[in-house]
Image (cartoon, rainbow, N blue to C red; front, side, top):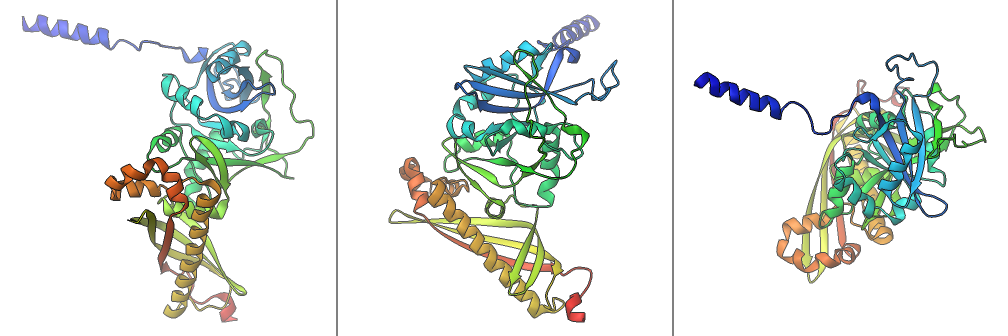
Length: 409
């Protein structure tokens, strides 16, 4: 009896675990590596999809033969889902977005319609919530698929690799995933941001990975830029949003200040200029603490940042082997960063009217009862808030040598 019962249980388990409900053979799928959302000239939704080309990447039964590693398909429709499905008119495989690495947006698209597409991302069970969110500056965002890509074969792989390495060398950009963007959109007291790509003309010879096969939804090859200009991708800064719409950009130093406030800095190089000298330091994992106060309807936020840093270059004659000069470096750094952070917050208050820093989150946590009264008008409260910033740094390393070269001379 026991053996029979165990046999029945095993059979039932094997039946329930025999396979997935919608199995698709990989060879029948067109794997999306990145996508670009824009509007056509007549106002329809336009989607550009970068699809991996297995033949060029060493796929089965094909050695590549110099083919492009990706095929870029442009399609249009009255809605995003329809536009994506229309891309299948020029592809012989089923479009699969589960491995999408990056979602690009034209400025025109980001300024007008992010809400409806967020509904599609979260509703459709085949869309992924992990792609990076990136706004492409300029009037021709599709040019991103003709840029130099360093050591990568596809645009999606290039941005994904950059997201894993750049935060350890600089804090001048942000890498925001789809799910994080959606969370910030729905979070009370915080507005979302996205990464920014700018296409910069360069004079160096492009690598072989810049050749992209463009196709439109009818299957014919789309015209590419005939000017023979060569471009590279510059990933720097951030795109600020309010209520799901693009409202402006932060430049490199401003983005670094933003990352300091939201505790999003692994390592950052900061140049401290004073008269004719320059000291360069590397900042390690700074920690910011925000305390808020509410008095007679006036919001005050006190931002306190502590960090350690190492000196990596001293171009002047400051003897950083001694304590007093090190204190001078720390004081100069503190003053410079305080000014940069205050100016960046002021820009968000006056130009964007968007709390991308999450000061509202701090008010919500620290004053929950008062938050209920002001949350509907938080944009106005944030614009008029008083922000105080203090930075406290300490040098823990002055490098492998003691005195600077100029002082030894």
